[in-house]
Amino acid sequence: MSCICSYCYKEYSSFQSRCNHIRKYHKNDELKNPQNPPQNNSQKEGFECKNCNKKFSRQDNLTRHLKTCTPKNINIEEVTALKDEIKDLKSTLLNFMKIHPQTLKKINKQLHNINNGIINNGIINNNTNIINIIPLGKEKFNEVFTNEQILKILKEGMEKSHIKLSELIYQDPEYKQMRNVYITNLQNDIGYIYDKKQKQYIVKSKNEIINQYSNERFWNIEEFLEIVKDDLDQIEFDKINRLVFDYFNDKNFKKLKKKELLITLYNNKAQVKELYDLIM
Image (tube, rainbow, N blue to C red; front, side, top):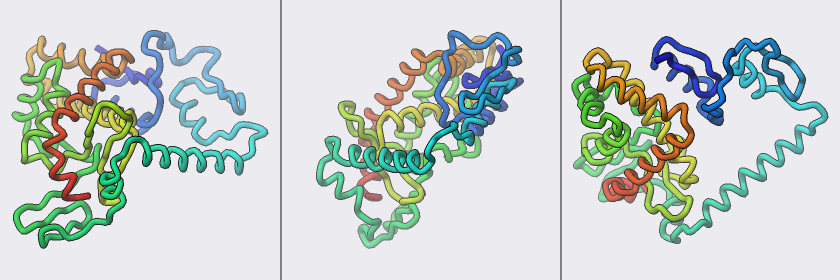
């Protein structure tokens, strides 16, 4: 099965190469329609920029161009002001969307001494343990897990390897420093994610958090598959390979997997609550 980028349809020889490409060029891009991929990226008519009418032979080149191309007759100052206004409005809405006053107080509270210990740079030291919170996307599981552990996650999980990995993170005390996302309810659009710059959990849109979290977990599964592919039989490989392929190429399937991970995080909220309370 060829490894095709779901954003620009560029083909790669391995999962790892495609994964690296997506991380570098498409981390914040919208997923394209997997049902209607172009048959040939080198179409005669090419890909045209609507701002300056410049043409490109490939979609990924156009995507990079659009990041810096400014539409004609546009007021840059007005656009900048509008972006700032939207950013402020989003922040205000997040702060007032069904957040308990005590939770809001914790969010704005500076890191402080706890039980005669010190919290600094995401480290909790209460003379009994030290927890270094690792931001989402920086976990480096290939350095944390042995090949045997990776193989166990994939074989026991199969079509639910993403859930198996997430449950391992939130249920095994050895990996509590990787519990960087906290979902407290399934009703509103509020979630919490650890922010390295602010050195604390911050409020963020739940949809935005789960989209990022889900992408990271499936990138992890894709990397795991590449690492231990020689230790899987063909049936096992095909099942996990199909799981990853469908996630990155089928919008409805991706939506379902994101919901599964959202519920997994919610069901394991108790495991991260103590850590959340300490840091906040």
